[in-house]
Length: 274
Image (cartoon, rainbow, N blue to C red; front, side):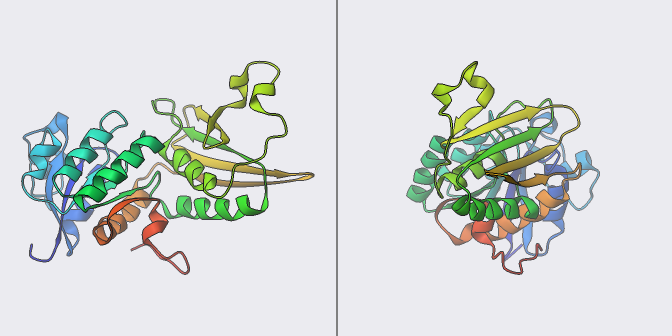
């Protein structure tokens, strides 16, 4: 195990976590030292997932899982649990990769302060897929040239948090470019103001929750007589998220404080996922 990055994973039996667990266990430069899955606590994770490469037991809490030692903590749990998990890992002096959604800008600011105080890095990405990273970059370019846009966030009917982490991250990045113009201020709307969506980062956000969607994000830009749509759609497989998360695990120990977005630790020019 010498020289390998020790990883503790919360949400190890979830949609992303089950595939990520095996990839971490199989990587020559990584070692899975802890796993959190409350429904399987106390059982060998390899037995739960049917993967003999995985040799750790599942824990019921993050603190218990971290006790075995970790360099990086990865969270793929839920909006209700993620902040407490992240703070527990930071306080233990462990760098963090956040794959769960539900945190807002104020919470991220608090996490950034906490991470800097402890001298660890936190990398949070609303979406670890390469095409989602490209959408964010392309949208930032468009926002510098087109003054009006709105964001549409699509997800499965059962997703409880809205907007999604991907949508929140996109809004935060576009807000760093400028606030979009509104031909009619929201307060000037005739009819229910909610029909214009929620205002996030100075822009309008619309969250759709319906069966048939996994996770999609679209940003619409408009000019007189022309329109630009930039959209990312996720499929049913977790492979794109796993590849991006592995990259994040390998890079998060190289900085202090919070970074948002996978592209903050990768070069997009000619970039290829590992």
